[in-house]
Image: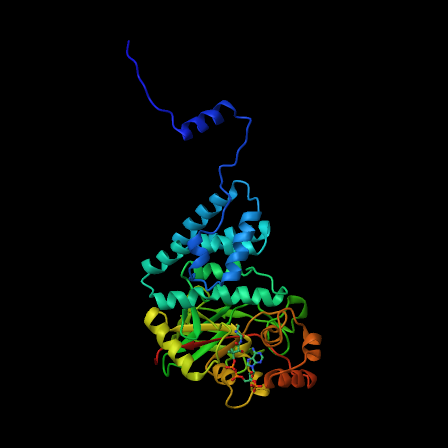
Amino acid sequence: MLCVSYTVTLEENFLFFLVKNPFIKLSLDPTPILRQAQLMDSNVFGLGTHQLQAIDDFLRSTNFGSDHTQRVADLTASISNRDTSKTATILNDALQSFGALYPLALILEVEDVVKSVYADAGIDDAVRDTTLRDVRLWVDQYASQHNGAIGLDRVFWISRHLCAIILHLGRLQFEPKAFGYPYQIFQDSKDDTMIIVAGGGLSCDEDGYLTEDQNAAFQTTLLKDANHFSGHLVDPVQGRIEIQTTQLNLQDYRLIVDSETIVLHLHIPSGSPLTPSSIDESLAMANTYFPLISFIVCSSWLLDPALDLVTSQESNTRDFMHRFKKFPVMHDVPQIYERVFGFGMVEDDVLSFKATTSLQRMVQQALKNGVKFHTTGGYLTNLSN
Ligand SMILES: CC(C)(COP(=O)(O)OP(=O)(O)OC[C@H]1O[C@@H](n2cnc3c(N)ncnc32)[C@H](O)[C@@H]1OP(=O)(O)O)[C@@H](O)C(=O)NCCC(=O)NCCS
């Protein structure tokens, strides 16, 4: 008789026990905790010791069922594929289900994956580190809005950094993406000047700013045949759509950008002063990292022509604003309220705010004088750097 002998390991015993007792439901997901190294070492997101400790405490005290490991796996896959939308969905689901500490915990879990995405894309470590420090910036912003609580709720924004889609180059951030605005930009073949033509069907108030349909003073039209088009031009200095239409000969113009064209979107994180030299330096870096995209687009309170009324000649914000050709963008509350006074502020809050900077004082005075502020879009061409 053949006698087979084998040893039964502890794990096999445990599996056997589970098979025999299917009614015993055990979670195979271990309690997630931060690795000791993560608690000790500096991380690429700029999170400090007390933030890491809070994340670790949160992980130890929360019951995620069996979902945590799956979430980490999904996040690893979406970041590796540089799929910002999937990444944002996973982080947003985590935020909605377990609160604002959980996205941070997940981001820490995939730190190595994020680093390898940057390495594979040939982005140097200094640019990577500055880009990912934006996580810390938004954690600080979250704390200032939530009585010092630790968390991250800007998950849609940060997903672009995790996937190395937005890059922080010098003072500014750049993101290649479709233009996305309802305008076409043409170049005059005779003298290279550019014109902005509004798409059809845009509702505008009497000053030519975009508005809701029910408040419209006029709606734009855009008519084209083989040789001509007739549409509403945009005043690139004031960033307003002209009420009258203009007829142009198509032969004289070359289409440079429409809403589908991939351009570089520029973002301005809070931080050091926006000096002209820091802007020049960033634009030069953008040329190096994105040599094929010279058309740069921004939408911000920092492009509002009304800054001329509330800043001094030598202010950085005024200099920055004047670099751009402008067009109107849809907005509800003007962004200057939230970025100069505080998130969630409306006009009454701004007026009663205890101003500490010259800009705040001047904006308050301008509002009292009836000035209207507008979040404004604009572009510049980054060819000369
Ligand atoms: C962009 C930014 C760095 C500009 O600051 P800056 O280079 O100092 O700007 P200026 O030279 O024009 O400043 C002129 C005055 O305005 C004040 N000022 C500028 N930005 C201000 C802000 N966001 N809030 C309050 N005051 C501000 C300055 O303190 C200065 O006032 P002072 O004369 O009393 O010292 C600053 O506004 C900032 O960090 N903003 C947050 C980020 C942001 O708004 N991004 C855009 C999102 S789309």
